[in-house]
Length: 387
Ligand SMILES: Cc1ncc(COP(=O)(O)O)c(C=O)c1O
Image 1 (spheres, rainbow, N blue to C red):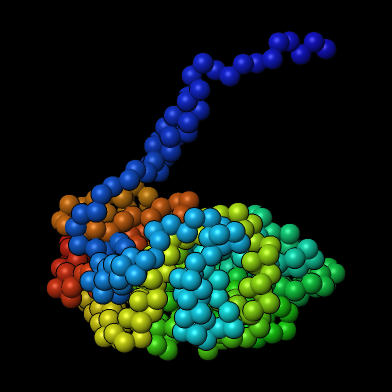
Image 2: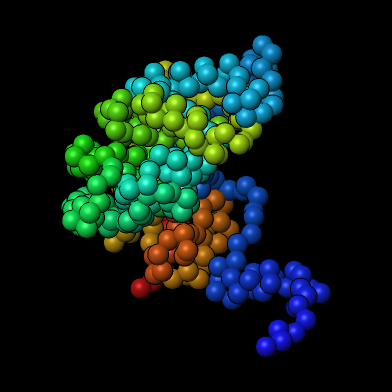
């Protein structure tokens, strides 16, 4: 059969992209970037460090002492700076880990981790609500991938048993978040650590707990750090106010990642200046515990306000408070009404969260005062859609 002449691309090469954007718009899911306005109920700057004079001074001091702005290359080439090494040594000590390795962000750290450590013949078992970066890493893994029901260690155990029955003999990598980014609830870490002791490794993403929860702000898995079958991720761009991420793990795993993790090997190292900021931020977590205490007090205050005004909405018990509205359009309308009153909070809708669970994702930080929190609770009471 004659296939005919080859088809040339349409003269309007941008049409498929516009069509896709139109399709998103017709489902109420087209997004756009917006500037920062209103009281902060949306950032991850939980301890208010991002704009703190102490952090800025640390970066200025590092510059004055000769720190370069750019790393100039991969860590394995000329890009390895004393500041990277100093941060990793400090972070390993702070979190109580055998070793630490820095990445440019939590997203890339998760992609590197899951794309590198689980091996052929292993099982990567993720919580159903795992972050997009863990899922992205899972697309690159050589291991078999499975999911267990959110926060259900019993189900995780069943999935492992089923995999073993079907001949799985390798290590199991159990991937969870210590504090879930969209629901603000906590993983059952001790049950999962026991499963990991029997079957392999536990990987804990502490993105939203680092600096805020656990003994001394060292995260909710602080008591598990240092075990050779525990890997943890601490982001530097949320409570620590800068950017980047640290993976804590056994020295042999760190060495393996340095040799095998493509996002580490084939990327320019993070700026030494963000290392200087992170070292100072860890010091602030250590010697300014009042920040953590003040944040915990705000979590308690908002829970109290919510119970008094909208008792059908359960508090999460953390600084991340999902207020489930249901429909995407209703959620976005409520977010817009609150934004118009000067509260910067965002509606979250599918595909970030499951259908029917669109929500306001409220984030409590030291950037919003106790008065702001009470005012927001009043506005929520007034504007919440009648059911
Ligand atoms: C649970 C979790 N892991 C990883 C990341 C990615 O971290 P980063 O923003 O440093 O890339 C995020 C960011 O939102 C997150 O919520």
